[in-house]
Image 1 (cartoon, rainbow, N blue to C red):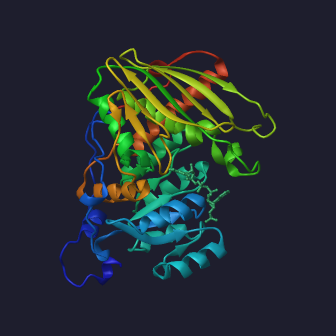
Image 2: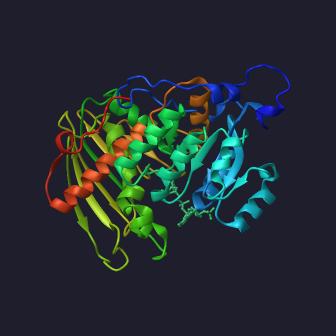
Image 3: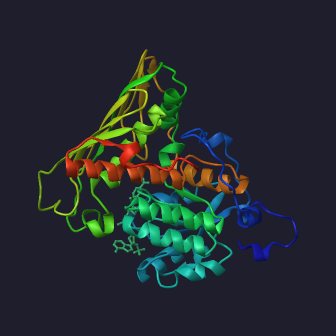
Length: 386
Ligand code: NDP
C-alpha cells in the first residue's frame, strides 16, 4: 500500500524510513553485531507499515529464494519487479496481483522514483550490472540491497557507496549468513575469543557448475569465476570468524578445463595472514563440491559443515554439537535490513563491508597473476573509515 493511501497524519515506520537520511558513524569491523532475528522474536507489522521491496532481475535467486522469503517477512513485502522478460512480468503479476502498476523493465526502471510503494530496490542481476542499478536506484531515492559480489571492481563498489551516501539512502549487501544462527555463533566465538586467540582457519566453498553458456562463465557479466561467485563466502567466513582484517594474501589458480573456464577462474586457493598471526587457508572451485568452515583457537575449535547453504547448516565445537534452528535466511536478512532502515541502526552487511571483500578479491587475483604475496595495507588498502 502506498503512503498516499494513509488516512491520517500519523508518521508510519515507512514514512520515517523514506524521509530519514542516516549519518554513518565510525565503527570497527563486525563491531555492530547483526543480532539473530529468530522467528519467535520477530514482529509482523501490519501490511501498510511494511517496507516495499522491488526485485530487479527475476532469475533463479529472485524466483526460488527471495520471492518465497518475502511471504515470510514481517517488516517488508514484495512491492515491485523489474525484468527484461515480458513473460516473467505476466506470470509474476498473475501470481502476485498486488504487483499491477509496479512492473518495470530495465528501460523504464528510473520511473521507480515516482512509485511510493517501493522503498527498497533489491538488485539480483548478473554481477557486472550491480553497480549501474544500485546507482540508478539511489538516484531514484530508494534504499538498496545488492547481491554479492557487490561489484566487479572496488572502483565500482566505491561509486555505489558514494551514490547511496549522496542520496542519503542505505546500501546493504545480500550477506544472508549474517542472519544465520550457526554462522553468527562462529562470529561470536571468534570475536569474544571463546576458545582464546584464533590460530588457524580453513574456509572452502565450491560446486560443480553446469551449463557452459551461462553468464557466470562470461567475464563481462560475472567479473570473475568461482572466487567472485562463491569464494566470497569463504573469504567472508575467514574474516568473520577471526574478527580481523587480513594483512597479506597469497593465491594460486588451477584449471582442469581451460575451454569451459576460458574467461573465468575455475579453482583458486588462497592464504590470508591476519594481524594476530592467525592464518587462513581458503579455497573455491567451480569444479568440485566443498562447503566447510573450520577454525581452531588456543583452547578449542569450531566447524560448520555445510557452512553456507540455504538450509541444513550444521555446526560443532570442541565442546559439542551446536543446537540452533534452521531459519529462512533470506527472510531474516530482508527483515533485518528493513528494521535497520526503520530504526536507523547499522548492520555489518553494508556497502562498506561489500567493498572490503571486493578489494581483497582484487588482491587475490593480483597474487594469482604475479605469483607474489601481497601486502594488503601497502598494495590494496581498504578504506576503514565509515
Ligand atoms: P540468474 O541467471 O538465475 O538470473 C539473473 C537474472 O538477471 C536473469 O534471469 C534476468 O532476469 C536478469 N538479467 C538481465 N540481464 C541479463 C543478462 N545479460 N544475462 C543474464 N541475466 C540477465 O542468476 P541468479 O539469480 O542465480 O544470480 C543473480 C545474482 O544473485 C548474482 O549476483 C548472484 O551472485 C546472486 N546470488 C546470490 C545468492 C545468495 O545466496 N546470496 C544465491 C544466488 C545468486 P529478467 O529475465 O527478469 O530480466
